[in-house]
Amino acid sequence: TLASILNRVGIPSSQAHEAISALSTAFNPKDLKVDQEVYIIYDNQSNGDDYDLKFLRLRSDLDHDVELVRTGGGVFQATKYKKELKHEYADIQGNIKISLYADALKAGASPKMLYDMIKAFSYDVDFQRDIHTDDQFSLFYDTYKDEETGHERSGELLYAKLVLDDKNYEIYRFQPSGGIP
Image (cartoon, rainbow, N blue to C red; front, side):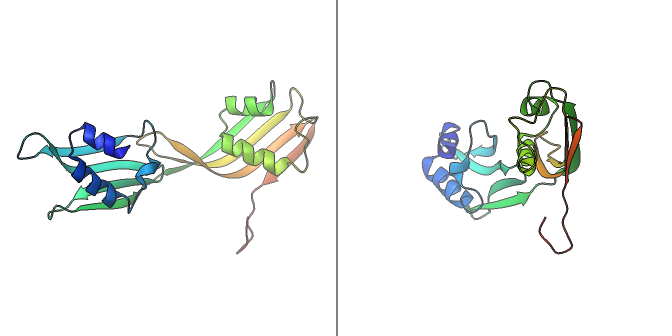
């Protein structure tokens, strides 16, 4: 828990509670995950046994950082910042040797985009009977990358293609003007 992290570095429980209460306005501390990094700046208190929390930052998700700052009046203030992510495209292609799922993942496809592709083709393709060795697949989709950490997330599936027994199945993302995609 965040309280145990703060206590482990020497922040008094009462101060940790104040900090977590303030942080709750921008981030639910219960959403803290194993191995999630928490950056803390603290200072010695006058009694020398405990530390005084000055600043805390954590990544709430790929798109946001949350910062907790102790103001001049000693009150904690939390702020959530939107991260600037680099927009790129992923173009994944390959032949099916083992299974569509295994081979697409091996080629670098996002599991979410693979799921979206299978869902989109599910009305036209029987994935139990129609997929054979040497059939082909293609996916083209958005990705958003945090260049600082290297983490990325998939956006929208823009194009997908299956070539099954020399028959092409293609889907394109299309959004009519003012309409729903």
